[in-house]
Length: 237
View 1 (cartoon, helix red, strand yellow):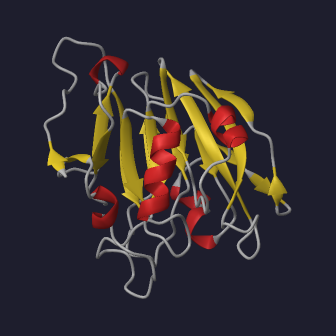
View 2 (view 1 turned 90 degrees about the vertical axis):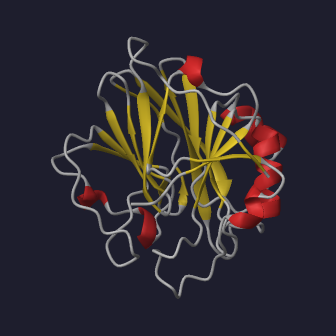
């Protein structure tokens, strides 16, 4: 793997948006204008036990498994967008302030939902940048799914295997999406409870252009995205 230093928003430049990894599949997107979108909030008991979050405008939930649905992590009364209802996909096409959000139906496994059910991919468009959260994707994307997701700048990709795609499949999905930034998620970090059966991140990193930030937060503007696909490894909270 190749380690590199990526450009960052500089003083006096355009305000940056941020993606903060809360652990597992949970992220907080904060736009340059201050809009906050919480993705797949994880409950206490998995090793990521952060305090409640203030000022969240919306929560997105890719599927209804217990490690992705802790809406109480957000204080107040945010809009909750659930990608599934009654075990089937819900078509989400929503604007939350300046953030456009839509969903694409996928599966939690490679057998069309047997045994783990369905999964919704969420796509976020903010300030000219498109972010995809793949949830617990369990298979390589079809042409139709790739087309529905569309061109992507930042991809949040599960890589730990067992419950989701593994390192090899995740690499194929990254090639399908062609995103400039890939942020791995849903892998064993040492903080995640030890009985969780998935693997770590290293197999996925092999042979790729990698930056380890030493932080839980990635700051970006469209202008500071890398020209080549780069895996950004965050430190979970």
